[in-house]
Length: 273
Image (cartoon, rainbow, N blue to C red; front, side):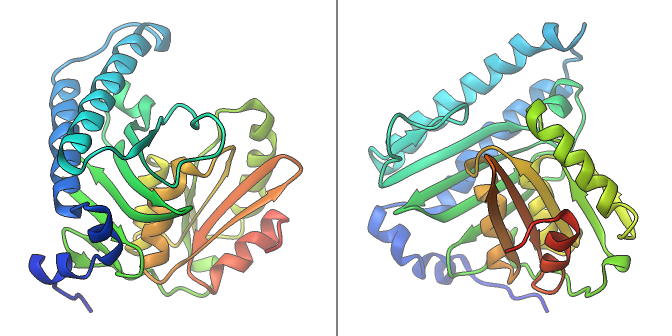
């Protein structure tokens, strides 16, 4: 069932965001505006050469977007700490902070392919309280506020209800860190024969958003940091899904699915909750 909420009702429920003076609709507008400009530029510009030759342009676009977003958020909502997408802030994380990824799926962006996304989260007292994931190619804005549900274009999301791995269409993303790659490939070897289909199709946040709306039945990733997964994780949780983030021997594994399939994923991957 799809539930439609008016903007006034949706906004009036944001008690935590109200206390911080943050409007989710203004955040959505900023994320859409900046990301659409990036999408417009790269869709009309074919980069030449290898990855090393394309990287400076992509990095310059990320830096431009981060600068504009940070300035715009400060102007709209006042000074809130900023944790850079390239690394955590020094020392303990701030009590409240923004975390922004201007181009998630940099290889897709550099190849002028779709399936990259942008994400923005607001973290308060260690919890993600606002999560936005925007797909400029599909013009889809996924949003979630803690304890208030997950939405795509303000239609409420519900996670898929499959109960058998053999029926599941799942996704993953191979890590860039060489130390995690071997473990990730072992996981692919274990899960691929057990599920209906395995895909590696998009940015982490976008694939997690697809779990939240039932397009995918599960997602897992070996990762070194939780911040890049925050936006998608809150979408899944608020769509009544389950997200586990487990640590072992200096590695971390994120698994997102419904509450029936999640423990089956962890068992096959050799990790227990």
